[in-house]
Structure formats: structure tokens, C-alpha cells
Image: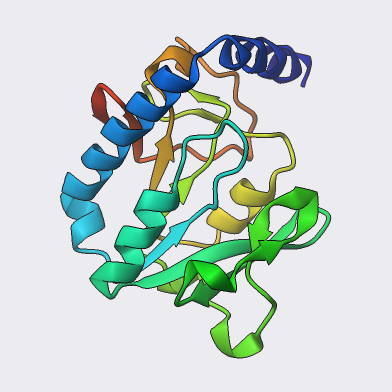
Length: 186
């Protein structure tokens, strides 16, 4: 979809002009909001992406999940558009995988079934305040998440939010969009 491709380009350009100070402060506030969210607190099995580059930094969230005794599932790309989720017990279990992103090793005994996930943190390039998410364009998360029944939250800095994300039939809506200004609940 050309609209999405152009919007991705514009948001990535906008992101390149954000300062490290802004990103760190926004990420800290987003993490604080996440940790106060009742839906997160009550979840037993949490899926969370491992941030890379200038994405919203998820390492504090990952560490909180591990400290709290929840089951932590992280994604691993296993083929074109295909992703599985594996449980980890330590961030040291992550290794550079597809696209240079830290991933767990494939281990059938640690495979988490989609229906076991209670809460999922989903990456995005941008979101709007009605829960529509602009991903990186591979469809990995939409394909995987359609098999879940969990609460879905996109983490997005306020400066990268837009008024409206163009959607296609397969695009899933988030239950929460969490920015440094707080939580937008759908």
C-alpha cells in the first residue's frame, strides 16, 4: 500500500530528527505508564518485542517482566512473515538473529502457544489514538497476533503519533497505545 510506505518514510524521517534526550525521557515515561497498567500487572504470560535502534526501548520492561516472575515470551522470526514466541528467563539468552534483532534460540520446550499469552507489547513505527498501528511492513505481528486472545499494546512516542493510520483488512487494532503522555485505551 503506497500510503503506508510513504507514511513509514515520513515517520522515519521525523524520528531521525528527535534527540536522544527526548527519546530517553519519553521511553522512561512510557515504561512508567506500562508498569502501572492493571492489565499488565495481572498478566501471567507477557509477550514483548526486543527493541533495536531508535525504537521505544523495551529493556526496562523486559527486566520488570523477568523480576516479577511472569512468563516472558519474545519473538523469533522463523521464515518470511512467520514468527514464533519463546520463553526466556534472562536477557543473556538473546542472540542476534534475523535483521540483527536479538532473539531467543529455537527450543520446542520453550515455545509459547499464542493462546497462552495474556498481554502483548507490539512494536510500531507510528500509531494513531484509535489503536491503528503502522508496523515495519512484514506482517509478522499481525499474522501472529490474530491467533491470540490477549490484550495488545503498542508503545509509541507522542511525537510519532499521527491522526490516522491507513489500514488494510488484515491489520489488527491495538487495545492500548501508550505514549509518554499516558495510555490511550480503545
